[in-house]
Amino acid sequence: MSERTDSPARGWGGFLLILLSLVVEGFDLQAANFAAPSIVEAFRISRAEIGPLLSASLVGVLIGAVFIGPLGDRLGRRKILISCCIVYGLLSLLAAFATSISQLVGLRFLIGIGLGAVLPNALALAGELAPQKHLARATGLVGIGITFGGVVAGAVAAQFLPTHGWPALFLAGGILPIVIALLLWIGLPESPALNLAKEEASGVRAILAPAQRAQTIAIWIIFALVLMVVYLLSGWIPLLIKDQGYSTATASWIATASHAGGVAGGIFASLMLSRRSWPVVAIFAGMAAAALAVIATRDWGIVGLSTLLILVGFFSTGTQNGLNGSCGATYPAGMRASGLGWALGMGRIGSIAGPLVGSLALILGLGHPRLFFLIPVLPLAIACLLALWLARRTARPPSSYGE
Figure 1 (cartoon, rainbow, N blue to C red):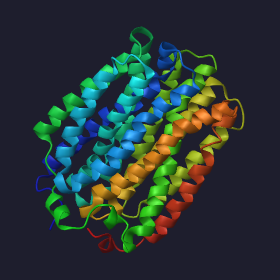
Figure 2: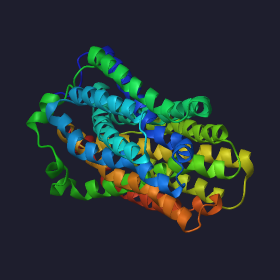
Figure 3: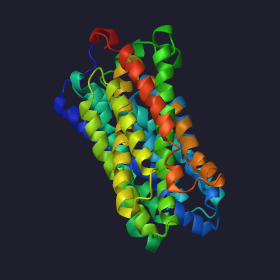
């Protein structure tokens, strides 16, 4: 049974809607990071105490990706996307009116559950709506929406945080997903692979079957390491820059520039993807590690540091998007949402740890950029080696992929 849509135009129209939904999701994922300096001041807490807030939504994302995301293989990806956009949008509106840090932490956790279910189904559906030969590239490219959403969040933060405070980010993060849910309901087709998925084995047992087990575990480890690095950096870069004497607006713009570099890197990496795409992941992970090591060699000043952070964003986000595309192309259609959901869920263990690792680094006196930016080098190096192993393992004829 074919898993391609009969209408290419409708398929690419759906692809664009999914991309837009992930821009909105990226906005919501990064909202707390950009709001962090203002939240610290508003609730009079220490920088180290902000770590749980930055990790709260990521814990929810883990639960949503692992337990709700795989339901798309059975119930339909479109249904999961629309429902979760509405739910996390309403919760974000509530977060804008939180009166304590504990309320914010709880609401961000619930928001994360909805966000976690959206991503694996969005990635799987995007790949299935595109032509077969572009599956990996489409899956990787649509993930750019997450990074671009971070750029939008940074621009909104720089513009509105100084005058309207942190609630402005959560209000925007509540309205946007409800609007996109309406657009998805009007124009998004269901997965052409849905009936095929119902006929095939899916879920965690399928992706941990003997034929898939080794590569699945390697994929989980890479996701965990890379997402730890991405969220460590995105969560703490604004605070580290502000600590060096720059304004909140300047810190937001520099972090935004890093996200913009990530958009470029994600597009570039996704365009490089093919059926044998794990070498792209290895190259980008290695280059991200090298860029971070260069930052640690000296004090670069604001121009040099900004330039290097753009490169870090380019290669680290390129690694993440390469992961999305490579993982999506590695699993057969019937277990694709399960494979992506569990990989993203295991990756969230790393992303949850990322902001907390930053808090621990500060407690241990590693807050200076020359020390702080050395922390992600080893995880990226390990991810690079595992991606090279997967490149060798999956270098086989296309028919063996189960498509």
